Amino acid sequence: MGTYLNLVVLLSLCSLSLGQGNTHTLYIVTSTLLNGRMYYIYFYMHISLDCSTQLLENMDFPGTDIKFFYSPDVDHCQQLCTQHPSCLFFTFIRADWTRDNRHFYCYLKTTPTGQPNVRTPLLGVTSGFSLNTCTTELQPCLPKVYNNVDFPGADYRSLFTADYEECQRACTQDPGCQFFTFVNELFTPEKIRYKCHLKFSWSIPVTPVVEKQTGAVSGFSHNIQITRQSKTACEGKLFPNTGIPGNDLMVLPAASPGHCQALCFAHPSCTYFSFDRNVFSCNLKNNNNEMVTVAKEGTTSGLPSRFCQPDDNWVKVAHEGVDFPFSDIRFELVDDADICQGKCNEDSTCQFYSYIKKTSSRHDYRRRCYLKRAITMSAPPRITKLANVVSGFQLRTCV
Image (cartoon, rainbow, N blue to C red; front, top):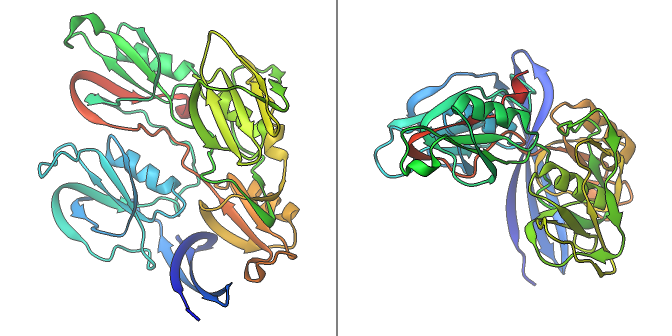
């Protein structure tokens, strides 16, 4: 008989205020496989973190990385850390870094204590802390523009504008645009001078995983905001038991046809979609010339609403037997899924949730209401140095 022991560390952020700080609950879970059955043992400890806005220039917090993103400056990096459910502090590699070609790297980090294990002086980096104990803002205003900085990739539309201010206005007025790059009058080759590239990133939460799980109920906060294009409400078109082969733009997890339809609405390049309920996959598709449908059991295809306020009934649906793993802010013990839904609605940082029923076979998880969130601020997929271009973000969140 073999015994296997795994240690998993999960950080959840609890909203109990203690002075200027919050209590953060660290959950340590050990799992042991005995005779084909998995047994779980739970330990927890509380750490108190104060609101800290201090930025430490030329100071590195080495190790304990969760993930890295690209950021144009340290303020953007700090906002990414604030939105990430597990990030407690970060290190940003600035444009003046000289050791290698890593510029604009934002490393998100965490430790069981909530503090860096090591602080090391290092030229070209800036470190700091999450602002999640200071603010609940999920869509920060990002008014800065960046000279000689390119945001490559994520383009969905381009046009010619007189200057970068006009390009930023075009981005701000286009509901699909989250950031832009403008090519100025000194750029080479001349034929693309004054070109304004509008770019996309998700402004509504994308669940990292959707999977079947007996005894689980999952859903979304009723407060999820989708950019309004009109005061007029409308519905898209759904085609049950129908597939649309080919022309995939991207494949994402989704909980329902309505959720998939909302993702298609949010992406400016999505012309139609197919949702497979067997594997919870949402295939966003792009073809402006034709749409060929085929009969396919278990798949719902459809068209997004356009130039109106889309139907938001999908956020009000609780999905029985469905789990949204990962992205936990924290959990609470409650008596049913309706109370869990209410907890998510009341918490301004919660975007989606999963509840484990009292009847679940996972005894140690019973009555747990997991509140969750994902990063929804503008996040370029890459950032590089490039002469004679200007990049920046939409200003809709600044109004």
